[in-house]
Length: 196
Image (cartoon, rainbow, N blue to C red; front, side, top):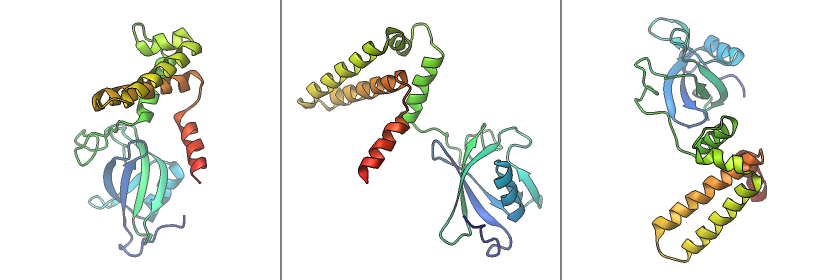
């Protein structure tokens, strides 16, 4: 990517900050060329404060930094989209975002992380832990059982039961992936390659 065009906005460009995992918009800030270069070199988001007329690295007082993951410029090269990983609440009020939204998004990757954490840190009484402790054959068997139950519910007209069986199958599938030390991203990659 070429450097953004700072000339259009009198040396400043708007920067939209988006969580790299949840895709939530966290905040809007402004950068001058120096803030941009510091952000790129240090991999922590730095802005130019219009009120104080100086650079400020987000989190320098609170400890809630924005770790830079990726930078995208818009079609006119005068606005940036920065994908970042926040280390805490982003807003000075203590809210997750400057738009007072919770920075969360329920996705399969979140469930996958929870399952992987349970594998790494077994917890007594946890169903997921008990699956891992039962061994790969039992986990694979559970996936088969859940698949059959989903097929059975697909033949009926009860949408709620069908959705619950689909959820059970997805959960057990993710446990099987974790048991095999395979990530959902690897499966997605195969699907992406097949789509070409």
